[in-house]
Image (cartoon, rainbow, N blue to C red; front, side, top):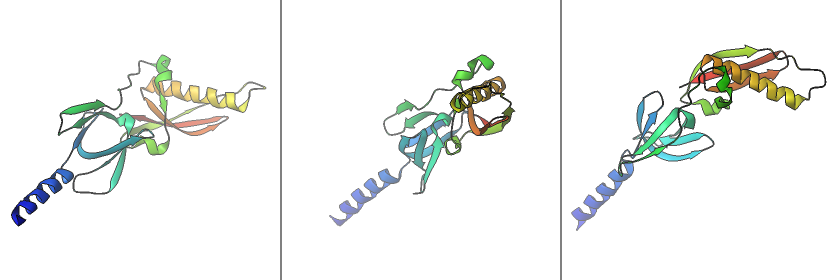
Amino acid sequence: MKNLFIAFTILFTTSLIAQTHQIIKHDGETMDINFIKTANNLVYYTLPQSVEEKTISQYAVAQLNEKSKSDSKIISEKIQLNGKSDYKKVVVLKKHQTIGLKESGIITSFYGGTKGESPLSFSDNGEKRLKQNAALKGSAFIVILSNKPKDLKAAIYTY
């Protein structure tokens, strides 16, 4: 009876520790993980044999495969840009949402506002200008560093 109890304990413990999911990133890299949840454009997970919670940008992850059920879930579609006209596809992220993406540079621009333009309108047009520059360079993600008059600046990210 004691041996049977130990055998069941080992079986259940092994299944809890086992790698349950696999992440496939847009750049082709795969990672074996224990999936926790997705929230705020982030995927939360732990690595095998670790209890430390880690995060990766939802935009960096293409697919999440569940190993035990052979089930897969699309996390995000890859954003394809074909020039400056695709600026509406460029996503503005916060710095903590870029984990797993590669920073490919910094873009700057100048936007001279018109007389009587509201601060909100200036901010929107500045963001539009930065998105257009990012789309021109083929980067699907930006983090706005400065949205001040005469000093528009953003970090651009790719897969």
